[in-house]
Image (cartoon, rainbow over all chains, first blue to last red; front, side):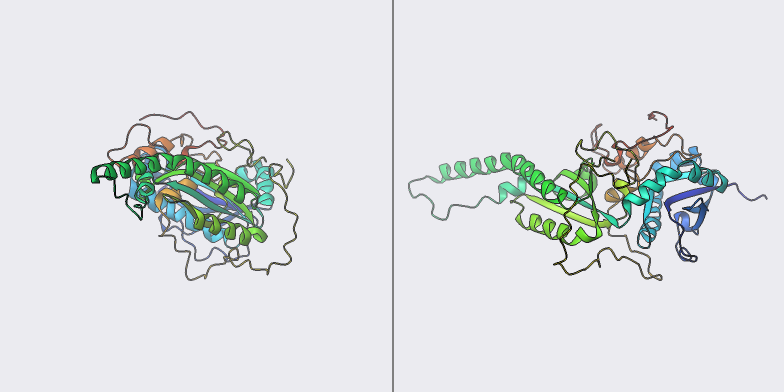
Length: 271
Length: 105
């Protein structure tokens, strides 16, 4: 039986790495990972069976949640391992070429773009900041008056409390909008760029509340500490029924593109 | 394109000398024997990044990976009660070169 046809799965592009750097890293499908160097750039690649990544297979596989998750985690762990040691331009999941000659060709073709992005990302990492709003939680945080009005009937008191809860619930979005604005302003001051992601669907994310803001910030090494201090301050001061979540450092996925894109804020990430 | 390129952002005045140099957050060289554990990252957060971000360059074999719609379909399967317009966190635009329009299957 002949060897199944192979293809080259590319995770990321970096500058040339010290030899042996990728020795123990495993990629998608537990395949080993190796550098493909061309013209001062390195594509980090796994040789994968073509029949797992050709168009038909990919269609089916992307619908297979288990495959998707395993592949996404494997892709991410290679990108992370690289980002830990060198400036890294992460590629989108499942970028596959017929062979390594094609990978080299792409590195030659897009050399200027990769070079510019690598220079821009040098010494910077990405932090994710999400703001959530939870009207039910905000309403529940309405306190009972310490001194009930003796002249008020239990029925009236109940209705009044309900009304207050409803008002709190209704003002959740305004409070959350203010929080988004102040959070973004305070953190943008410490960021070299920001990118906007679409808010996550709460049922998919499996966390309470509604994700009302989903931003990524590119932060220079020397600004990480003040950025995180500011983020913690914002977290601590978030009004009842809202919260700020911060994660990172991430490899700079959200800032890897060479050109500004339509979905980013007009004032953001002008490159 | 200039190499610093972030005209939208104020350059910092750089008077951080009073702050002790602590870049441990960025010095992330992992222990070689223990690749970064990422199991605690939620799939949705991960897909935000590995599908929603990262450079999109046209692969040879994934020309129609405007197939992000298929991923949306697969995630939608997670939540049976979801409506048609489930927001797809990874679908915000990025420069997509040579990629065909999205397909419905």
